[in-house]
Length: 200
Length: 200
DNA sequence: GTCTATAAATTGATAGAC
DNA sequence: GTCTATCAATTTATAGAC
Image (cartoon, each protein chain N blue to C red):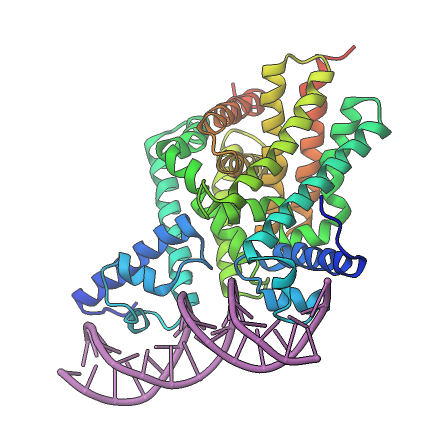
């Protein structure tokens, strides 16, 4: 990795952070580079010094999402020994930013859905696939750690990730915090049910 | 409803049909009116004779989605007496266009997610909310018809709609027909399980 | 009533000054 | 190495011809 000057590195990070927010709030296509620059408090048009294209910026944004998500999973894994507890906390986690979810949807889910429209060969679509894989792999590991056979654990992982992403989509579309809260609680209960036979 | 000349009505319908396809394939923001006109085989720039703005076109597109969806639900209701059969067929229905789902995602889900970014006061966001309501209301009715109390039927409806929309999102993000097929089968089995106690 | 030419605005991107 | 002025292309929208 190339080491850039401190000031440069900082502004770059500010641009990425601004883009992460704006892609979530407005979507990828609707967000202009001028708006990103404005929120990052960087001169407009100057974005191209840090990123060759808008797509290149989006690539870094998705990578950053991936990095952050892995860190969250690592933290859960470290903090809790019981995989079921980890899964429960994972399901609950969107509630920590419930208002944001209701207003803007799932930052990962909506971005993935949008960039998938760029076509399967798109670099961004591939990055989106990787981001979703992080969810699937970690949740599969947790189910497997509960004594569930790998294939079934893989299916349960898809059930769980699909259900949570769907709940977030629905809560956003219906602008309902109640839907978000209730659905996530029900998914949490489902986790307990689907793992109950396996443990003890 | 105002009756327009035949030719006009036909071209209008072609424009709506073209926009429905393109919004699904490319998304709302990415789709230009020129592209819509091209696919509808209407002179470019001529779209404004039929629709005042791009947003007005999108409104009609969502209304048309809503109309089509209601018709599908009516057909299911008429063709099958058993609500559980209706729900099973509803869950399976995305498989009829599996390739399209894997490639472009859910035409309703992705469009809703995109227009929700326009803000809660947006006409399009409200139309998206109505579209999702059609799903929730019909599925709730089916669960209720199975003898499930209204509040619980409402929650099960959100479970079901969320799970299916999530499965479609995941299948698209992972570009996996296998995920689509397996997840929908598992949701179908879940429907049987969650309604088993209630009937007979 | 139908369509074409064109305007007006936006936006991604670049060349080059400091 | 950092940033400003500007270009080129795209796209929504309109005025007005046919």
